[in-house]
Image (cartoon, rainbow, N blue to C red; front, side, top):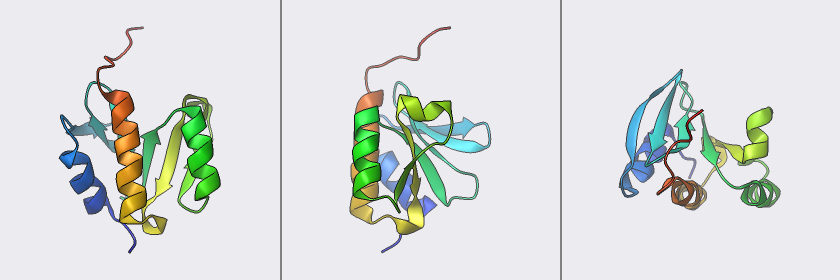
Length: 109
């Protein structure tokens, strides 16, 4: 079944320590660092993977996952198209991104 913004929020908020806050024109989900952002239209979200995880997800399900087409791609940021994702796709992707955000405070510039 296709996923929605409500599904993303439900799954993300079930992950330990997750909070939601505005982030520019998106909603950001974070623990110690942001690990996902939801587009204002609720159709897509961006998730923080490692570059290897990004390559694997995009190869495994290219209609669901795609690298962000800018410099964020090199850091592993990946777009998930919610309507093309299953609940398992979304839950696994959020759990993976969440794991990278735990215990990693934001870098100071």
